[in-house]
Amino acid sequence: MNRTNVSHAAGLAGLGLAAGLAGALVMLLSQKAEAAITERGASTTPSKAVEKVSGVDLPERDEQALTTPTHLAFGSALGLGLAAMAKVPEPARGGLFFAGAWGAGTALITGLGLSDPPTKWDAKTLAIDLGHHAVYAASAAAAFFGLRRLARL
Image (cartoon, rainbow, N blue to C red; front, side, top):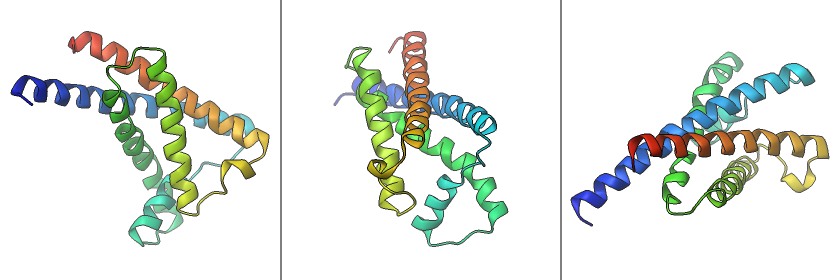
């Protein structure tokens, strides 16, 4: 791989991270709005995942403080998937990204024992989760598309 290809790949990776962050921020807003409407409490699943992986048990106030940065970091990292699929045309890239993002998040929380598998979720829970991930994927894909045009990559 020559220097130009490395620079191009690095540029796409940076755009993917930025797009993933943008999508995670929009998803966070949709989750907060949905939680207010449904009167559901705020989720601490992201911080519980960190606790499981690290083996550190945090007090509840620290779980709340860690949840948003963890969610944003995970969403940003998932944005690398958009960079990896840079040659896939839209809307296929966005659809594949949605499936991958939802699948990765679901596999993580299920694998860590923080959730039952989606096959055991009720229809409302499944619809809400799919809806939030659709918001994330669409926002991240749109951000990637726009940033890529601006960067001319």
